[in-house]
Length: 315
Image (tube, rainbow, N blue to C red; front, side, top):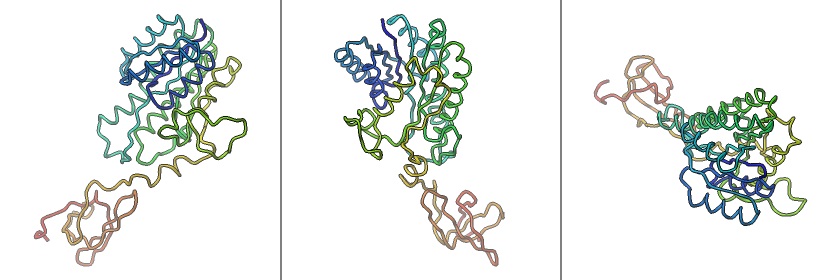
């Protein structure tokens, strides 16, 4: 039996392109899903038929340690070994919001889905790789994750992925003596159907075309090769030089204050502990609105968090 690769989150998205590439490379595939059973099973069947490999779908919620442990056991029982883990599963909250607007449940979803899931998976998978003296681990991050950048309105997701980047590098250091490498790829702005698409055919393509999932898959193919033994502990930017955080996220769905105060309203200015009247409000795209308030000879500007609306007759 050939080498075996486990790809998490394989029902849709980038993982589909990864699975197609690894099938071309001759890997037997364990395709994980949480809810997309039919899609994952169909992908496994199609790849088995088209590429002459063995592929099977495995259910597991990657945020649950017991299910992840069972997943790895099931893969080992089915294939007899595990050589590659591509941890592609990881939730993302589309709505842009400030940290203070996240719920505890949303925070846990980001941390458990993107970081804790990797801990549950790797601690089990590595034990199968060590006796072989070979293993390859791939994680997925975001642009400049190795710099621990602030990602405005994506704080929970960013915190989890920065942690995952550090975990990936830690594994690379710890497991190098066992022939196990660990690297992270950081995609560019790939959306919709492009996530599952193969690159255009032909050797010479435009250097500025939009990336697709197949572009990432080709890089993963190189990282998994036995000759890539010394390529480990790297955070690879696959953005074609684009500033993803700066260009693609800024100014999309607008983030606004959770509440607004009308002009003429009487407010308690918390820093002053005094009442004042709102005389002007300046709204700014994806920033706090600035309120101008006045009381007698005092005029100043504050954000909504520093103001409490009062009874209009109270001043």
